[in-house]
Length: 228
Image 1 (cartoon, rainbow, N blue to C red):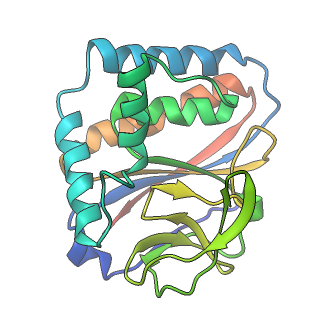
Image 2: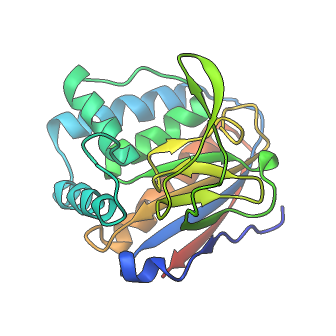
């Protein structure tokens, strides 16, 4: 499994000083213990409801401020972690979707951190976090139908050589690179701001890898810390 090192536009250092992320490449194996995903998701939801981490509110508030800094409206298009946690607080749980997706959603909920999961085989080139020019295609769905839209100029996006893979930093993932349990090469990105302790970011990454390896006996992982 060759190492994949995402690129981060140096201009983002002025927008988000102290941004850091864990990039995790996983070579999948057949699922042997699907119950691991269901348990992880249920436990994460219960933690939010009963015993939340003390820095969660500050971390998500900082993400709101980052979104505002590049022109997004976090109440309308919140970061992915805030959206998931809002659903849990409203409904008391989150319905399972796919074992791999459930595991990385559980990490996002439990640690109040945006977590992206991508099918690396669908990528052209390496992931790149940058400011949009506004002409990059983003494949998505509207009312169940495929469509292409474009980011706002200056919007923070993840992209590859073809187009946008995630809009508004970590708000919405595209269809082309969407991850599920059928993928062989999986790429995960855990994105944090300084209000989340670095040790906890590393703990979240270790828990993601551990749960994926319990889900898929024989899966291997490579972890990189990315910093601006």
